[in-house]
View 1 (spheres, rainbow, N blue to C red):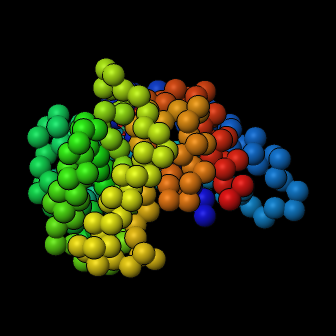
View 2: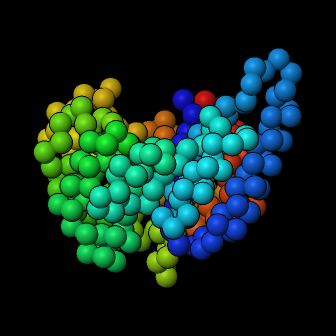
Length: 264
Ligand code: PGA
């Protein structure tokens, strides 16, 4: 299965022109893959699976670009949050994924587990896929308990069937690049946290192992570490912030992900 790359542009990309510049570079990269695949291939090469989450102000424009050229079948539109009363509009714009519970909102804007839970249900009700961010603020002796409580609150009252439809992004807050002392988690310790989350879902939510949702890792992902995370079957992709807006760095990430898809 192809690994998923979710670009969370946050507000780093401030104008449509900047967005176009990044996407143009990605498009060129995809075109270069197409050239190597031309012989005997039918239609577009479908090597990558990308989600771009731009700021709301030009989400529609980005959505239009993603429907053209080499992006088709390899990239879809995502949103950074679900503001009230916009779900219908998002659907019309072809938004397929929505990030909920990002730490900027949980801690910067005081969004509680209850609020995240409500948004999560709204996203599902509107047939989009929630990318649910889960992660401890500090890695101390209580972090396991913290994760268990966050999972319980965030997924309250959701059926096993609904949870299966979600994607969980394990994003330890201390590892996110906006944090002054940020450093990426190690794959081993991220896997440990994913195991804690999986156990809650299996134990409390009665999910069968085969029905567990997909897990992504997020927090200071770069071209230097993306391959290490993706070599584990339990990690189905990455959520990339800062490095997704540096077009050369992002293309390096894409090429490592492509390699990892080929090896799997
Ligand atoms: P980062 O951001 O990759 O810059 O650490 C990740 C995120 O905030 O989702």
